[in-house]
Length: 457
Image 1 (cartoon, rainbow, N blue to C red):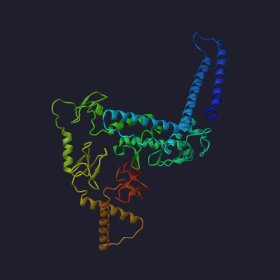
Image 2 (image 1 turned 120 degrees about the vertical axis):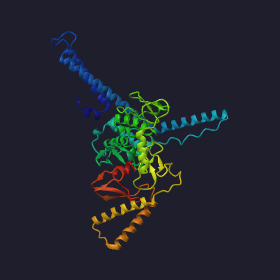
Image 3 (image 1 turned 180 degrees about the vertical axis):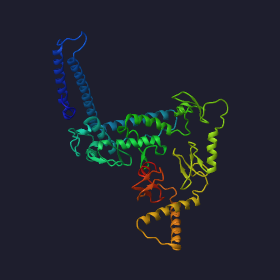
C-alpha cells in the first residue's frame, strides 16, 4: 500500500481509484484463503484475520479522504462565494431590523436601535486563519516542499480573497516572538497586537493565566488574547480547563468548598443565597464566613479576624471586589487588584471616587532614592567616574529630586516606553532574577522581565 505522504499528494480521483483497487484485491485474496488450513468452526485463520484488519484500514482511509474532499469543497465555496454570503447575511439583518421596527411602531413603542455596521468582508487576519486551517486539516504542514509554496486556485474567487491573497497566501516561515524558534506560519497564532506565538508558548500563556490571576486574561501588549481564535492551536483539555477557570476568575467574592480535601470553586448558580453547595463533594458552605454551613447568624471567623487585625496594624488595604488583601511597597495609591478592580490604597474606595492624595511624599522620595542608587551602581559598572565629598552628596540629592518629580508626573504610567538594562536584575513584579538583561520603563523606572512586560503590566 502506498505511503500516507504519497496519498496526500495525489489527486482525489487517483486516491479513490487506488483505494478501490486495493479493496478489490483484498476481497479476492480473502475469498481465495477461505477453506485453506484447519481451524475450529467459527474462527478465522491468521491470514483471514490479517485481511480483515487490512480491509478495516482501507475503510478508514476511504472515510478520511472523503471527509477531506468535503472540507476542500467547503473551503472552495467560502473562497468563491464569500462576498455573496456576507451580502446575504447583511440582507437578513436588515430584514430582521425592519420587522422589529414595524412591530414597535404598531405597538407605539420606541424605535429599536439600528443594527450595527454591516458585516464587513473578511479581514486579513481572518483569511490568514482560514489559510492556517487549510494547512492543518486539508493539505497538511509536512506536505509543503518550500517556504514560499502557495495555494493554487484554478477557479475565480471572491474579491475579499483575491484582494488579500498577495499578502496572506504565502506559506512562509516566521519566528515565534516568545521562544524565537523558526516555525511554519500555520503553527503560529497571531494575537491582536500582531505578535505571533507557537503552540507551546501560547499554551504556556493560557496555563499561566489559570494559575496566576494577575496574568488573567491571557494578553500581549495589554490586549486580551481571544480564546475563539486561539483554540485552533491549543489542546482540547487546555481549552476546557480554561473555560472553567475563566468562570471562576470572573466571579467577585468567590466561594470555595470548606472541605479541605476538596476546596472546589462553587459557581454562583449553586449558591443563590448564603448556602453554597459544592458540585464535587456536595457539602454546603456558608458564603459569608466561607466555613461549613450553619443555622442562625454567621459567627466570626477567628482566623480571618486575626489576618484583618494584622492588616490594620500594617496599614494594608482590602479590595472591595474580591476582598483580597493588598500591601503597597512602592508607587502611588492607585491600586489594581488581581481581579482588575482599581481602588484607593488609603480608603479602599473605587479609584478617582475619593479625595485622598494620589501618593505619599515619603514613599515617593524613598522610591526615587532606590532608583538613583540603582542607576549610580550601573554607571559605576559601566566605567563612569563619579565625584566625591559634598559635591557628590549635592549631586545625589538633585538626582533624587529630579526622579521624584518624574515619578509624580508619571504616577499612573501606562508603560509604553522601555529600554534594556544589563543583568543580573530582579523583576519588580514577579521577583524572578534575570541573569542577562531586564526591561526598565523610561517613565516610571519599574523593572520587569519579558513575561511581566508583555503579559502582566
